[in-house]
Image (cartoon, rainbow, N blue to C red):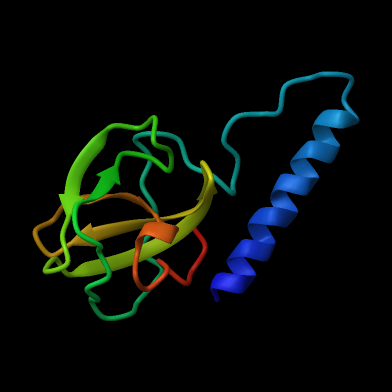
Length: 120
């Protein structure tokens, strides 16, 4: 699944650069169906059981970008309920909930299991 997400993210990035190059300098539209802004949530589409995929001190953010506010911190002993993933800053990000009800976005490359397997 990680390979498919990586290929999808690379394909979206290539498509975005072609669109920008072909639009006489117009700025690309912010957001879109493949990304989410700070403060947006993701649907609970991933029905896998809870996992323990956090590395030590993983930031949980309000959106799929390091510019979004930190809403919590995940630790290896915290269980994660994945909801879905989107393309975001620097790769893919998963929207998740911890057992103690912290909801937010985490960059998939910082998760031991690679994040959600279902796109938002």
